[in-house]
Length: 273
Image (cartoon, one colour):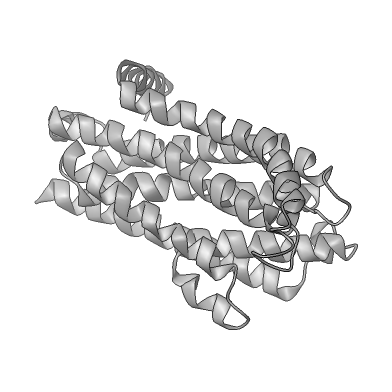
């Protein structure tokens, strides 16, 4: 693919996203989630503590104990998820218009085109996730000295880059399993249910919390939680991370890349048959 082709594809993607109100709404949700976390969680914490619910009737831990759970679900999972859905529905729009079929007679191979889309969605997923974490995390940490929300700088960047791989994974999953946007909505709901594993697994004791490990975004969340433990113990840089953090992160990397590679190969076979 030439630089001119990449520029043309980028302009076309922008046009497709901006003209679709649903895709614009998903893009706006990324901003709304970040605003809700930053300005909603701290007062909610005080409200629950004032009512004697957390700690109290709902649990023994203060509400700020669950900040890492909220960031793992809404930023590390939902951020790349929404980016992936945006690009996934762009691909489905092209499927309905038979644009992808027409590419068979062009010099650009479908696998190259989807690889470009994967790289672009990863870059945006990484950027969105990092921006959300940096925007929300410091505000949450001000609510209490024990409310660690961010690991060290290098672990944070690495985790956000890893989480960003969810964007091309979700995009390619929609492209491979749905033939139009109606089916895409159904598959998007199915993917969204996977995020419940992150919420449920927070409450599982070790080693049962490794059971959802086949869902790659969960392993990113787990690596994030484990890295927070290292940061609170004084190991805020990469050298302070223990073996379990590396195991979670490397497993997430392998599963994400295997899924992306497998879906790209599947789409290539679909076009050839």
